[in-house]
Length: 150
Ligand SMILES: [Zn+2]
Image (cartoon, rainbow, N blue to C red; front, side, top):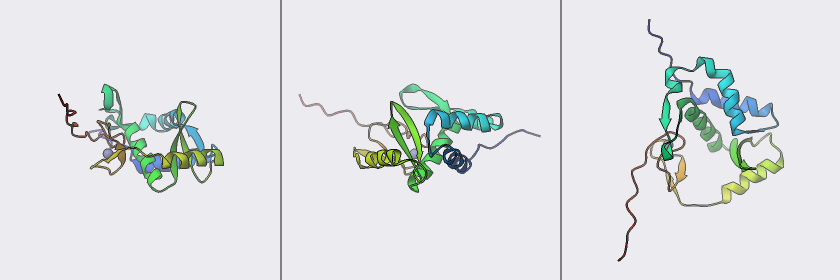
């Protein structure tokens, strides 16, 4: 018998994250969220979960973290979760449970506009300069060379 386990699905992480945040006043640094997920699910990770994926600027990270980002994207789309930068750290906010401080920060961020492009694979908006979609790892086609006028 082969021991080929499937990946842990984003929906599974989604429920874990909601539980985790609601037990922690609705907010945690993203690093803590990853740590909690790794210590809870780590020994169940399959080879597929551990597979290293290419990120922009040549860095790599395991597939399970990508699936966690998917879970975050699901939450953001539903208006349940938000990612906020505070003291040079990324924080994950459960909007229903967190203090006004965090909710206001999340709303402020939403208003900020920049040029965006939509990922054709997962429909999440990405920065125009992104080479790879942060959510699903889709590689965008290279942007054309800048026009030079002599
Ligand atoms: Zn994508």
